Image 1 (cartoon, rainbow, N blue to C red):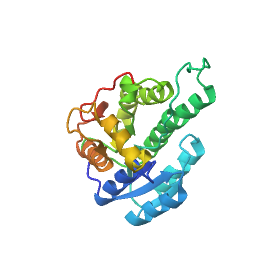
Image 2: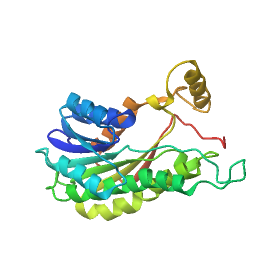
Image 3: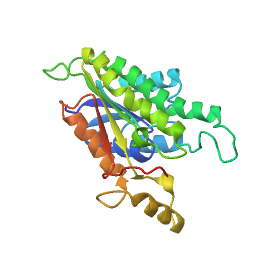
Image 4: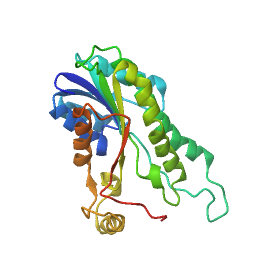
Length: 257
């Protein structure tokens, strides 16, 4: 699908994978709404690419609806929605102290990662459906969700995170089937170990990253946000890609710990 002269919305677009995706889509001729809670950074990113910022809590229906409406108002047909907003959490089902996993924390991870992704997918898809077909196939747009290899083979202490990311994987095929009637494709990317600011800098960070890299098959390094963004664009460009879950992980297979 040709992105020139279209609009897109990217949740979590103020940093990391989301920011890289915003910049790549903008470079392809897209007007992009940066949907994020970080107002200062989100506005900076949006201004740098000629886009718009919408302060967005993805777990809140009204907040997402307002962000999608902002994307619809950019003067170009909304064709793309990419969900990159998410949070991490580490806790065992039963801790070493014998206490069960905190339920409020579990719900928070599910609300942001899974419910938040579903919110953007459903609301953006409804907006995309209001546009005219973009090609002879009747395609109107693409939704790309971000899961994780942890949703396939989660490690110790990732029960909440893996459940949220596994849920995103699980809704890929049925959502694609649901949205086929309105010409919207649905794809999910499962990143492995990606080098983003969350890991910090300095000797301690470098040592931690080295441990993370050890199980990667090749290339023997962390992935980059720019590589993720290029995959997003490649999936958008290839009209026959639909209802797929794509690993983006250098061949890594997580061990239990």
